[in-house]
Image (tube, rainbow, N blue to C red; front, side, top):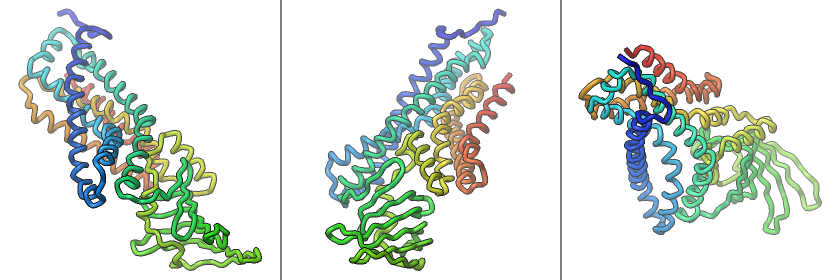
Length: 366
């Protein structure tokens, strides 16, 4: 029997890609709509309590859609791949291709190329569209919906905050530890004449107040003399809670890879430990390729089904694979944040493990 090959741009390749995209686009749209509905009902109470206008709500959810797309592309990709190949198997088209001498790897190449294209597009999307839209929906949430005054002035490297005790300069806000690192408070009178500066190495939010570490106050008298005193750990230097600062905090998804890398370099220059940001930095490169990795596992699994596959079983398999990936990613991410794993390995471990599983499935396929 003559062996056939699916060459680049062949009718067979175009057919496989068309079948995949015919499911991927509506599944992606459906996942985004489901995400929107769930998020809407989660935010409904806040919208009603704050008497948010319809336009503000539309702007909030509109700016949040790009982040939703980023989150649902991988599960949409694996479900679409399993379903498209499952339907081909139900119509005996996979058997026909295999009988004509087309190997599973030849069938997989155009689909893997499509997965790689989606992953690269997701990386570009995350670096350009998502950071801007994330900043905008945070602004709409705080200022337009919750009616709070915009007190924070942020750059890629630091935070300025106009608080009740004066102007606060913050080198780093660690949302995981609920702590402020490198905090300086400039206290002034109504005429903006400086009367004291409080420098704090770190301030940890305890739930009821702040616990200070390395706090020093330098008071400036009317004749210009400066006096210095060390403050106790329980000193009340500000009335704001951690929630007030989280309102103006930029999460990792609100920064591009280059912006986050510049922030890490600036923190290192100031002698501040930025190891947790290193995990986020590597995750920005690893996560977009989740789609390619899961597709590489889905293809040989779907290729094992020769006839009459259960669509429900295929969809369930996609959910199991996606859930397994997120469980492993969550575990390695936690190990990276705790310092048990290097940041690069903690971010890429899930991709490496599932890539090896995909390779093993291809090699074991008859």
